Amino acid sequence: MSSTVNSVWARCLDSVSREVSGIAFQTWFQPLQPVSLKQEGDRVELLIELPSRFYHEWLDQHYNKLLHDTVNGVVGRAATVAYRIADRDESQAPRHEADESGIVRRLPPSPGRNGSKKRQERLQVSPEPRPVPVQYAYSEHPLQKSYTFETFIEGDCNRLARSASLAIAQRPGQTSFNPFMIYGGVGLGKTHLVQAIANYARTYGTTEKIVYLSSEQFTAEFVRSVKNHCIADFTQYYRQTDLLIVDDVQFFGGKEKTQEEFFHIFNDLHQRNKQVVLCADRPPREIAGIEERLLSRFQWGLSADVQAPDLETRMAILRNKAAMSGLSVPDEVIDFVAQRIRSNIRELEGALTRLFAHARLQNRTIDLAFAYEALGDLLQESPTHLEIEDIQRMVADYYHLSPAIICSRTRKRDVVNARQVAIYLAKQFTTHTLEYIGKYFGGRDHSTVIHSCTMVENRMDVESAFADEVTRIRRSINGVKS
Ligand code: ADP
Ligand code: MG
Picture 1 (tube, rainbow, N blue to C red):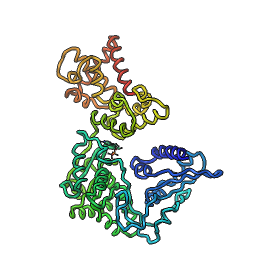
Picture 2: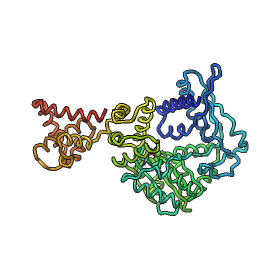
Picture 3: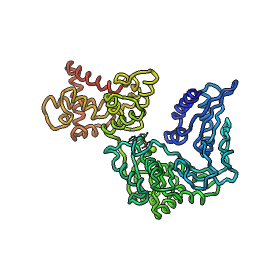
Picture 4: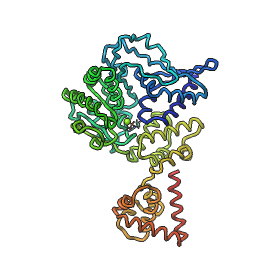
């Protein structure tokens, strides 16, 4: 049964992930645990465990219909979804005490809650969305235990962000990095790093009250506290934290009231040397819709960016992931995946996970041929993963030259030939502008790019050996892409 419930849930997650944003998926669906799938006569019931009561309200309010439709679709008939709250005693703990995972949990003010009975109750979800119960709910965002400094691979792309994070984790509020902001594109390790700070602080007890949440959760809670007339309670809670981590602050953009509330909380924490850590998907200055005074506060301490990892770091990440999964992956496969997926670590991991899954399902050994086969469509969907430098390298290989010489000023015939072919193929295989391509080829201007393309096309029309040459190179590039 457990394998059935797990596979049903895996299919539900897969389907939900296509319907909601990545952040919503990560926040609201990934932490859910399938418990059982019961069938009595015609009735099927899927029981899911939620990390906290807050999840129940949120799911019920926002995703009730989606969840039902998804489960019905996957199970293939009308099914009931039931929830139960993870086995934690919410009401017995004193207010604001850290729970066993170290994350401060605020206790619901309602006097009607009494722990053990409530804990065991199963919360039935109505088949159709219904109004949210008017009740204040509090944030409790579980940390990923695996997001630690040990599992975070350091590279040039993230060195500053990582070392500052570690310094903060060791002495929250006592460094000059307050606030500390990590910014950078999606899937580059921001959430991993800031959760590593929280995990470290918890494990080594470097501070007490730790709260990690996304700006979306903060906003949702604020809105709720306004509705329920308990703003004072809400602010008080955040003012009592020693380490407040707010992820994805770009979502504060345009939310003036929330920003104002956060501004006051921020000031209060900062004045008392409490640590504030923030993440954003772009540099603070580029976040639209954030008030100037808050923006300037974001930049008081230290901002560090995370960039797309270089090849070496990508390979190290893959090796580490493979080792953690206990599977042996040949170096050439690590190299293959790292060469082709370059922009985003989440995708890099996704490719490896897919390789593992396919290998297990088909009972195959992971080798290069298998990797080609298993990852084919993944790579095809991402044509931009092929970059000018790949093309330069492949053309250079073909002509037994170095990429550097292709970009140099030399006018030797064989080099000019290779350079023109590489420029022509760069124009064909990437979406970059003529200017961009020219710059990439040793700072040439766009007219050189046009000239190279014309030359290659003209020669291909009249010189069949040359046309064959270009076709062969094109094929090898296609081989990488597909
Ligand atoms: P972001 O918050 O920037 O969108 P995440 O922190 O969610 O990105 O990272 C995406 C995935 O990549 C996570 O599973 C994370 O563990 C992994 N990851 C990112 N950077 C690294 C790294 N340097 N070493 C190991 N894993 C990483
Ligand atoms: Mg993130």
